[in-house]
Structure formats: structure tokens, C-alpha cells
Length: 131
Image (cartoon, rainbow, N blue to C red; front, side, top):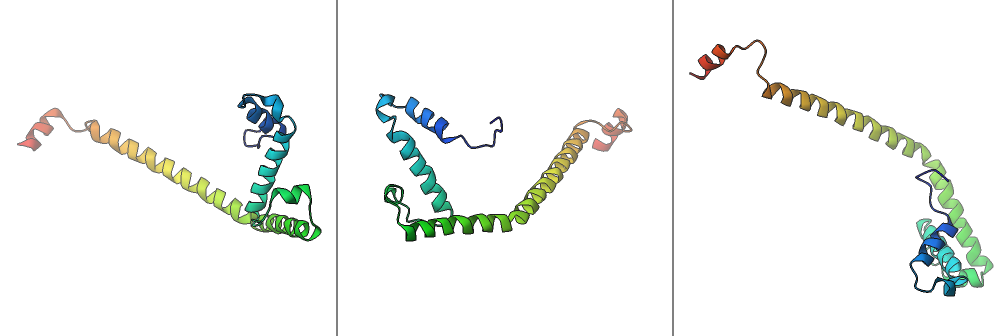
């Protein structure tokens, strides 16, 4: 519950939605169902199933339900199979971030050295080189 990357639960999402309504008590029964439908519909679209409708919740049909479950299972298998790519990508991002930080440190050091006079150059040497 303290994980900042965790998604908010359905009851907390309903509370937030109800707090924005002028008469929240009117929506006590409908809002949780509507929010659940929206989340389920979004999840199935992510899985590649774009034909999900409210009728699928109200009066599910076995053939459509099997297709929905199949889409969800296929997506989860695909995600599991591609997990190593995600780990590789995160490692590459981390490596590139370290490289960028080291480049920024070098650039900062070079800018500092350019602005400051070199300790071995005397003021008389600087005036001679300008002439």
C-alpha cells in the first residue's frame, strides 16, 4: 500500500470520483460498476481485445468470455516471455544514465578550468601573449 508505483485500488478510485460529484450518494451503486467496467475494458484493449462492451458484464456469453480470457492469458504469457528484454532495456538505460552523468562531470570540470586562469601562467605571461 506504501509503494508509490502501485496502482490505486478500485475503492479508492471510486472515492476520488465520488468526491468530484455534486450529489455522490446518488451514484453509490452505479459508480463502482462503471469504474470496474472502464478498468476492465482498458485492460482488455491493452491485451488486444477491442470488442468488450457492458453487455459482456451484464450477460456474458461463453464464446466471447473464452476469447476475452484467451486474450488476457496470451498477453500475460507474452509479457512473461519478454521480461528479459525489459530487464536488458532497464540495464541499458541505467548504463547510459551513468555515462551521461560522467560526461556532464567532465564538461563541468572543463568549463571550470577554462574560466579560471591556469596556476602556472603568470600575469606577465598573459600580457605578453596578447601583444
